[in-house]
Length: 118
Image (cartoon, rainbow, N blue to C red; front, side, top):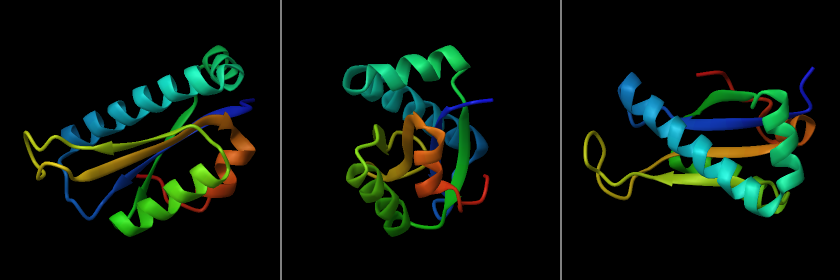
């Protein structure tokens, strides 16, 4: 049973390739993990010890992604918004993904629990 997790939200409106999505998810996971390690080390340590549970879900637009980011900020959950450098598939400055957590699973689920898996 897991008590902590991270949710990674990916924009589907960008029509990124599978490889590009994988890289954006990796960027989000690493960045949010570092954020948690610095600002909430207890949550980070417990998440690490449990095996680093992650789920990847989809959102339809930048506006939708930003609404979830706002909820993470409001609930003081570690998170990381990924802004692409534009070297491959999307223009520079494109927001591609958002990681929320690691944090208690119940807290992450109150924000992202209704989103479909990617």
